[in-house]
Image 1 (cartoon, rainbow, N blue to C red):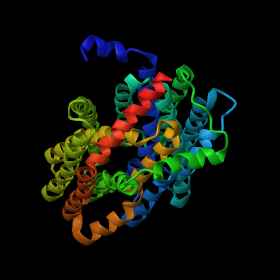
Image 2 (tube, one colour):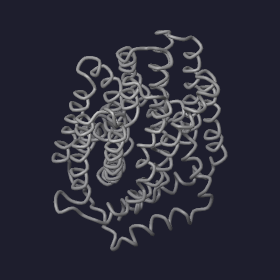
Image 3 (cartoon, rainbow, N blue to C red):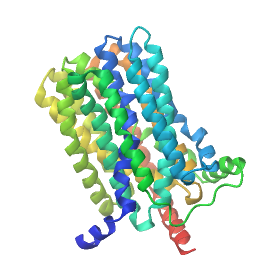
Length: 422
């Protein structure tokens, strides 16, 4: 595609709203995960307790359970997708403000419960965002729209991690959470500016249809268990390495909160470059080869943290490790989103997308406590070596299932083309 045609394709409201909506989707995740982990580390909680707090992310792994309900029930305002988006974004903002007011204090379990509520609302927001993105983007725009969305999402993660760490060093943790809760207003404003889909999707006639249809279609496919295993294992190594990364940098190596925040801030440019490079490369390499190459690069980036653990408190090694992780992470995420989209039946995108992305979240949610035990057993250096080895089965599954992945990608393209002709 020539540059003028590309610019013309991108210059529309459907693409433009993907950036702020992606930002609103990504902001709560870090505030209930890595940033919360930093807060708890600073106030002196032990590593095993912090590992338990990683279970706060459980709703991201279970969101498929209530996704059919959000497909079936239509709020009395702004339609089925935008109505739910408004309710959940307001709920997330209120929940983050409540976390700020409460703080760890003498009873950190209260903060943990509030974080769990925010994670539930955020996971619900992801459900409806994924459905809306699929409904509103025209077929030729989906690749560009997904790339813009990922950039917004990654910017939010960095804002809520690096930005939050830098802010906390100047204005304190509670004020930082209040400020970031206010940033959710950008998503609320965007909802009112967002268009309705040009071809509204039919609402399931019953809750039974909303639940049974997507599951029946998915599990009727040959080799479905292998595909589900691929979803679980493709980013498991990345999840293990990231599960205690902030605690490693601050508590393990002795970097200050501000130092970690500054270096993670540099990762923003690296993330955007990685996402753009991944998008361009995928257009030439295809999905399967991109999954293989990006998955391998993603796994190798974990060895950068093994090198950092061996080097000790080295700012050069810290910077290199963070930059490499962000570049490869952006590329791997782009390929993984494309994988999930290719596996979804267009009739049941909301529920199937929620189910498949929930499986991927299992590694991120349940890796915290075992990772803490592994660190105590073998130390940080060998821990990051293990995170590299754990990533290899996911890459092997891509190779083993390459023929089926090509077939599913072809089926998805045919189904979308068929629906566009109706």
